[in-house]
Amino acid sequence: MLQCFHCNSPLDPAMSECPACGAEIEMSRLTGILGSVCRNCDAFNEPGTVACVSCGEALGPRPGAPVPASAGPSPFAAGEDPPRDLPPIDFEAVLLDDPDFEPTSTPDPIELLDPVPEPGLPGASLDAPDDFAPPLPFESVALEPAPVGLHAAEPGVGATPFHLVLERGDGKEGSRLPLSGGETTVGRAGAALPFPEDPWLAPLHATFSLRDGRLFVRDEGASGGTFLRLRGLSVPLRPGDSLALGDRLLRFGGPLPAASPPAPDGTRRLGSPRPAVQAVLLEERLAGGATGRVWLRTGPSITLGRAGCAVNLGDDPFLSQAHAEVLLDGDGTARLRDLGSANGTFVRIPARAERELRDGDQVRVGRQVIRVSEG
Image (cartoon, rainbow, N blue to C red):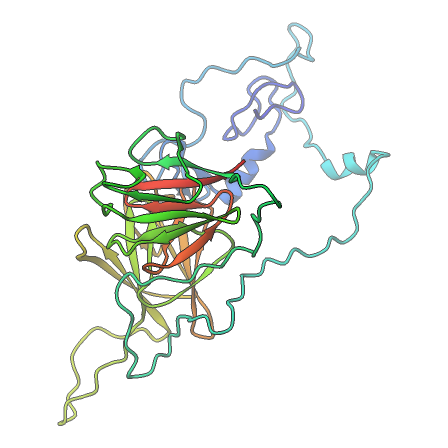
């Protein structure tokens, strides 16, 4: 809890001064410079806004809230008025006066480098040739492989170090799912892990396999697909890749197709102006396979989320306000990155493909999200 530096009273970050002693609250200066987030709907508001632009809730301290009681003894005698203009604390001076404080040398730079795809890995080229045939819908990216031997079993030890946990879906969240020593199937009926109430699951949808102390998931060709939550900074995108954010399914359509050539008499088709810079298409896939909304967006960053983004997907309890982004690089490739969302961004693995799983990975099949846990 935030407390006053002078009298230890509990504070609200939106207050400009301590209600007990009148000392200035430094946090309010940041709110006035950077803006504030609504307590009611988590929407961002520009500095100086008094009511939330999204829901209309009043910003700042809640009206009628009682003055918080002091968390410590009052430094002022009975009947003495506390000072109203206390000088702000000079944190730098406090640190420099501390005999144990040693200024650090120039820190080593933190290199936040995106994973480099292996040679031959297909990428999303925005300068596709005229005879380029896009892949079929819902063909997906090759996610970055796990290091070989990450979960290699010790010699003579046959027991698996893994178990599965239902993160979200039809059942009690956090419940442990049985994982056999060989293959464990997931599906709507006749599978080792059945979810009969999930209409988006095929009877046999995916298979978890244990081999030499390592865990794999294999897509069994179901129309709904098998999705893996992103880990790391970003993964490459190709035209036709599908991604799930909350309960929304999107398809990356790739670069905007070239304009049709004019008719033999030189007449061109009438239409809205084309973007002057590189642009890509994103499609919303509706239940049943139909295409919903379509967005044409330019880079270099295309944010995806609930509100305030380049692509606003609307109200969804599993969507963050800014959930993920598509990055368009100067060399014509596209990448997908999660923006630290609570529920993650999932990318479909290719049909009948297999991926190795690590501790903490999450697999989505139908409306079931299954987490891999080690130990």
